[in-house]
Amino acid sequence: MSAQKPGLHPRNRHHHRYDLATLCQVTPELAQFLTRTPAGEQSVDFANPLAVKALNKALLAYFYQVANWDIPEGFLCPPVPGRADYIHHLADLLGETTGAIPADASVLDVGTGANCIYPLIGVHEYGWRFTGSEVHAQALASAQAIISGNPGLTRSIRLRRQKDPAAIFNGIIHKNEQYDATLCNPPFHDSAASARAGSERKRRNLGQDKNDALNFGGQQQELWCEGGEVAFIKTMIAESQAFGRQVMWFTTLVSRGENLPPLYRALTDVGAVKVVKKEMAQGQKQSRFIAWTFMDDDQRRRFMARKR
Picture 1 (cartoon, rainbow, N blue to C red):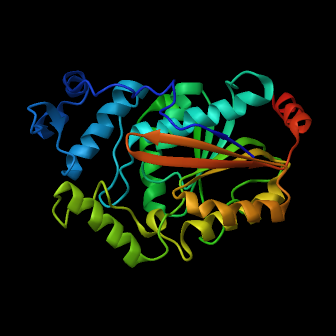
Picture 2 (cartoon, helix red, strand yellow):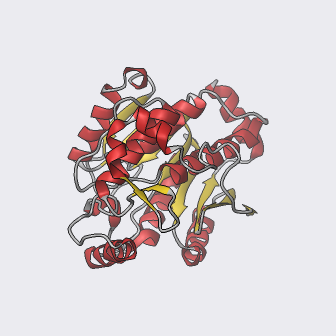
């Protein structure tokens, strides 16, 4: 296993403070949500869920040329810089096989969500092709509306409904399909009560009204599952073994470092050939993703050559 030191990825477009004047030109509705910090600096009212949504809309429009983006009320509104970091680190991982980041990679986004955030960033930054899986019909419809509202995306992103809520890859990866990688932001909590407590804690930290749940909202399948993150990823690991010749790298975010040991044991049990941990950081927030493969170095090189 190898690891990488934390830090915002060098290719991430969000190293600097937001140019709010420019973002407001791109998305005029953002202007109504600007406020002043105690130090007198202009900022966004992050306690207002509509402000967070408007900021995301502006960031996606300005940096990633996503002209039309929206999500229904009650679905997760993801922080764009952190999501971009995952994509860039994944690009580096794929590039290690041949020494160059592939320009035509095929990626499966497990649980793409109503926001479709990973495909939007990955298509713009690297020209990759994405398949997004989703169990929730309304989330799938929202993601499809985003794709349809941006004609340049229709050839690069396709969506599939996961009909079995207990399955991850089964029913999604078809026979004879090949993917360079999978990615996933798994549900974190192990119960609805835990998810509510986490959201309320975040709202209190921002002085947010109890009823404003958009930026810390989320449907059940986005926030929690039986057994929490570890159980979800263990299912992913168990299913991945059957697709070890169709997928080069399986990856997933892991929210807490203490969740890693049982996942490493599960990966040993299924015979993963190589396991990698990538550390990431955005401000005070630390995160990471793990990646595993059932192919050795030579098999991965041949896999990429055969796909091209």
